[in-house]
Image (cartoon, rainbow, N blue to C red; front, side, top):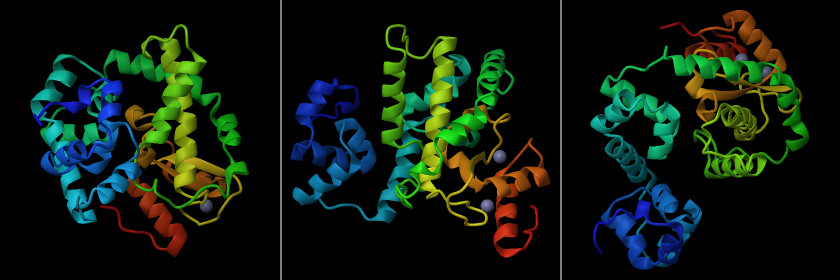
Length: 290
Ligand SMILES: [Zn+2]
Ligand SMILES: [Zn+2]
């Protein structure tokens, strides 16, 4: 089989090819693609890929090998020149680039840091977007939170989601909901109205995903259920790109959340503060700041 870029084949064709032993072997063994990537290409779930790998007696990689490979793979696909061209020259947004590479924004930001590409924090576009999002978000904050609350408790398991970014399921829900909510005028999310709907919908799904990942349990005091908030580890205002990164969210009960912001304020919140805070609540010790 030639080294074609199967990623760009239309879905009808990949559907026909999917789960063919040769295709699986080619992608997984010869091209050394991580199994989640193979799953994306073939438009099936990673579990299905693993099932068929076993069935075809194609040796599965160990967790260690897989982790190493996945890191290499992301490095390989997000090359410095490509990233520079897209972000600096073509002025594409982080979320556009993340979509193109099929990774989350946090990954793109990591690569940029690694490559020394500076983030445009102060571009007009970003400022305007932030203004809109701020306006549409702040009014709704609590009612949206209330909507996803504990009626769902018990469903959550701890969890395949842990440490992952947007799950495929979440991505699918977002895109489906966007299409149905706004079908005739949908122009690929480029109008302000679409941006607004997307932002609020993503926020809702983001909260739900974080709550489920954390099994509806406060990650500081370990209380389960009750009034739960989802806190932005890197704060909402200063990190617009991380607003819906699941890794940037954490479940805190109302009491712990209030206490956190009472101690650290509402600006410039960091992971370090959160670690310090959760250690403090859990063990009554304050870790030294670095
Ligand atoms: Zn708590
Ligand atoms: Zn918070």
